[in-house]
Image (cartoon, rainbow, N blue to C red; front, side, top):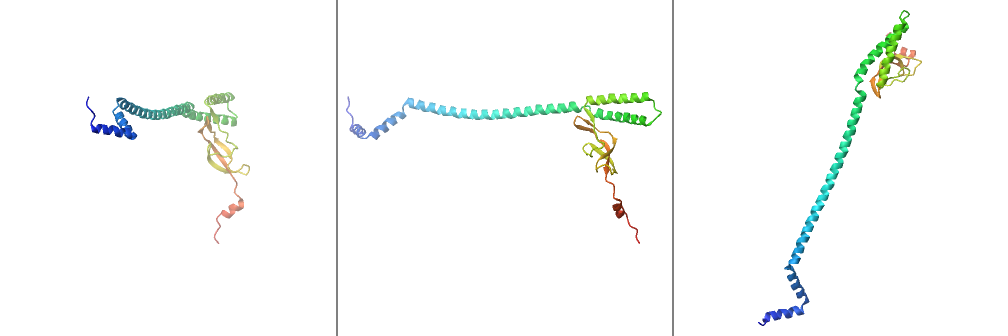
Length: 216
């Protein structure tokens, strides 16, 4: 058995007197420990997996937000389509009904003329009146209603003024005569009422003041 060299003996003596040196020697020995190296790899792998999990979580939140927006847009589209279909159903016959109003006008005119004539056949008048009533029933089924204009204030949303006349018994802008009856379909204007609107009578004194004076 060989004896230790003087350098080895000197190192051992130094280690025994310097605790810090012993600790360094143990740490240096731990760096080469296979178990410590394996644990470092495991920790590195765990850190990598945690990073991927965090990325996946953020991506999941983003996709969920996109899903919510897409669902809201689809719901709005369905509601808008439903409203459009309802509007189409309500007003699909608007053009036809507007043309039929001309027939109603003709029947009203015939009945009015018959009432003013003494030589008209009463059976014929009754037939015209019955035809008009049946037409009005058809209008009711399609929610067509007449506009009450006579005696009411002029409303440009429902009335069309074709002329103005002076009146001292009606307030200004009052419908004094109805030349053609107006109608609504549901809440929408189908045809405006053609009306005559009142205006105040001119003051004779003001009229004289405004008349041109002859030159002397």
